[in-house]
Image 1: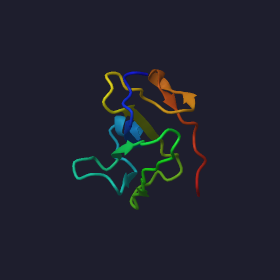
Image 2: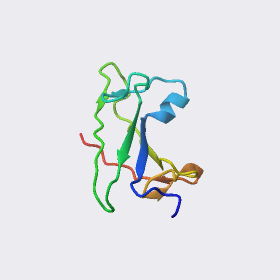
Image 3: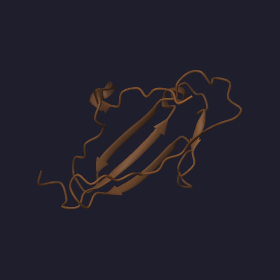
Image 4: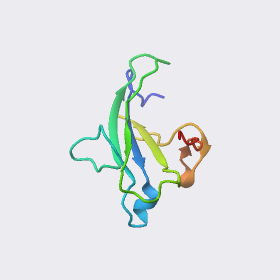
Length: 112
């Protein structure tokens, strides 16, 4: 589209355990690379895409807190993004349809 700049820049946000926080409970982990103004359960990043189809990564390390009791329920991690500089950025990711009409990634299998 004409509204996308020639070198697009994505604004990304990863958020963990958002359902638990909505219930007034503390998140069960924290992102290590977050900025000083960011809450521990969220990380934001900017990712420049200089060429079409070029793969880029944003490192994100999530550390599980030692003092949590609920270690068996999965921790949902939500990725949202928009294109910087556009009047109407797209939000969501490729995958299954989530709530609020955004796209959501399919559930990840536990690593342990």
